[in-house]
Image 1 (cartoon, rainbow, N blue to C red):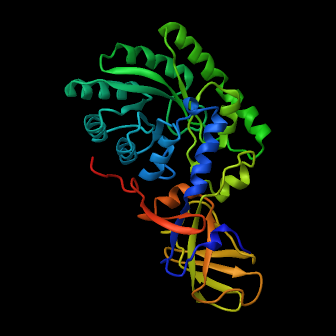
Image 2 (image 1 turned 60 degrees about the horizontal axis):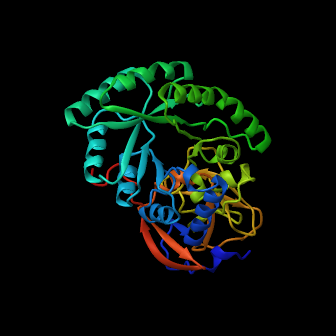
Image 3 (image 1 turned 30 degrees about the vertical axis):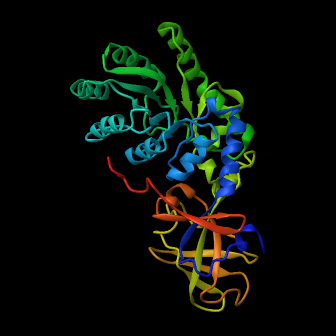
Length: 367
């Protein structure tokens, strides 16, 4: 089976390798802008790609608001000269000092953080008092994912404490709905709209009390199509930029292209039907049950074993592969897969044109 990925000369690429199609990435960015109805309602998460070059591609398309999870990702966005960066992860301990260092190093970028409890409000307030600076904050509202954030009733009690602080400025609300991922778009829409009813009532009440606009940063890729169509929020999908087999198969109303593949080699032929590839846990996301990847190949393969450096597959036909052969495959989960690579190969029109560092792969760049 021949497609655009197989046009790439692969013989000199050491495997396993991650290959990014730059043209598909640009297409996905432009499609996300179109889905959102413009860049004003788009605040993409960079945790999927972690690459300075892709951040710059997003900025070139007019996107200036971003979301991230780590200080390294925030620093990468500062390097890209993003205007507005929300660190959507609880900031504790020495990370508070690192946020202040970011603010000093990148004064043109507006950094903000999440708040979901009184103790954190007091801690951040005291730290920024010692810095002699203020910090923008979003209240993290738990809409059912039960990971971080507080229920709407508890969120109401945080508003007064934030407003009493001289160092904290309330910018808006943040809601991540990662638990809403049913493949049916109709059912996903129904669940998502119901879940957010209380949030919008809270936001409307806040706007009346505070006499200012209170934006809501909401969702990920699964609910992007719902929020973009039905809700007045800043949409924050992340996976869309590279897409993957898992989301492509589940959320078919979103027409993003799979822009990343893994190149892996057959390193051993166990028997007529069974082969071992150099694609272990350290090369592809492994938190979900098998299969890990979807092969771009005319033959069907069953993935029967996976360890640190090996993936064992069984072919549907005899002698389908030979030792040394390169296979291409789409990861089922691209986000943690990207974080396993220091560099990616960059393709365009079937040719390798560059290599990009995965800039924010490590927990620290300089700060």
